[in-house]
Length: 364
Image (cartoon, rainbow, N blue to C red; front, side, top):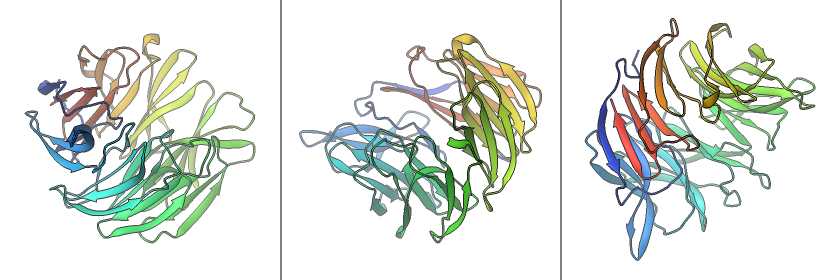
């Protein structure tokens, strides 16, 4: 099994400070097939255009894909691999309809599809890979129009559907009904676009959203319909829609989760307090820890592999062993990160990429 997180304390392989092509584009960096991909801006005519750029461990970069349009307020998805060196991505500009695109390893466009232009970036793009296809949609309700998702492969569009995209697993794509709190989840076969199952939330409960997917499991959070505190984490069989197990958190909200193989790591928040949990694939808690109150504004789980979990707090990256919870290593975040800045990070194949506005670090 491949290792995602460095087993030893990593060092900085490359650092780029304010290169002219790197601007504040919202998508997180991605480590795809050993390549670091991230969005930036490049000169284009009298102005500049958004582009997907590839960077190596020495900091050298090349343009992989350019949006042939000048604009502002770009919303972009984190790129995902869809086999044979191909990458799927999506973007939207303020004055240009959203599009989903697949490019090959040289940046040649293989296919593209428009996404409902009435939807704007009050919610984030989500890109999920399923074999040689990508399912690209919106991660949240934008409050005024129907969310739309499109599935594309190298040959073009396969299908499209409405609803909030919750995730992709075991050849299925999962959606909730539009709205802040949904009552229905439905599954669509990625290969055919056919509906495979529908699941209704239990009476007096609502689906707040999805927090992760495993190889064959969708994890969602349910809340009482009357707004009473307390989240329930529900593991749903991706093939059937049946509940495998559910765990109630009497205090706090499930804020983030990562799943890898038979392990899961999650973060809960409650009135200034942060707790983290390691769980197995049956919902049993393997480890639980209270974190520093200072971490409430920003404590996230970045990655999980078969031996370690990688967390980030306002000051540090922290790697802990799954088996006993001991700290394997910790390193301070670069100086520009401070308490209220979002951390844009990616971790894969023993490398970590960090982005802070117009600066990039590669660690390994």
